[in-house]
Image (cartoon, rainbow, N blue to C red; front, side):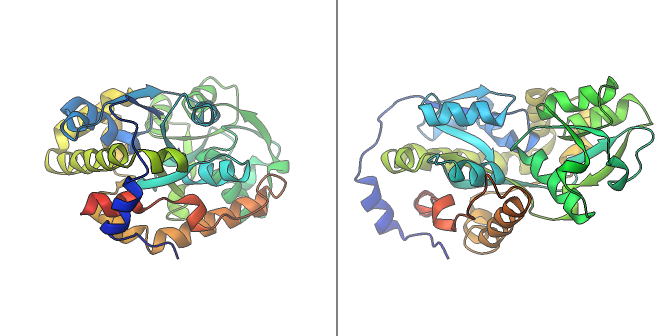
Length: 319
């Protein structure tokens, strides 16, 4: 089991050097679980912690991964499953902070004529390949004795999938909030077939970077962790203001955002310290096993926790 090293070891790691005052380019998507990042930016928590962060918006996981691998991004907010997939493809990517777990905030939606996962047989389903939506779809199918071969996959990002369902271009869509609430608000005929709450911990997100960048920039990584912790605490102490900032960032009206936010759990620094040393490592192994079982051609191995997590910065931030 991967352990957080004591502060003394973290200080030794810091001796490998930093990148100075370089702006940290961070890739994000319009997912409410990433909300504390926008709060940290708007409230000045990054600046207060001494790190210059530029949040850069993306719609596709694969674009962020390509930007990370090429060095055009330093940090990306990514689904745990995406990190497992990327490591299998030889990408140097490690999580240094658990951001959130999704429950009802990731879901499979469908219109009239589809009342269950079994009813999706032969139907068109929109979801993003390799993203959290892909994992949820594969898990739901497997639990119902089906595979992707039983449906017609229409590749598109989560922000587009809900719109495709509303427009009648597909029979079902896998997406996340606020797009779930947006789709349901359009027409009472749309329904939720399945959510991530069926398997708690299946959908989770981390702040990630290359292992090399993390080792070379301990001060920046530590500052990002502390700014995230500041933001989570702010949201908990000022829920109305905090949620309004996040809703604006993801483009969601408050009447849809409030119920959506209930389906997500954010993790602060203290909760990270407990979670990543125990339950989360087992969850990562289970996610990897599900991915390998449903896509053995691409997921050749289930990476060990040491290959997926860099936890020295958490120990340094805690001290």
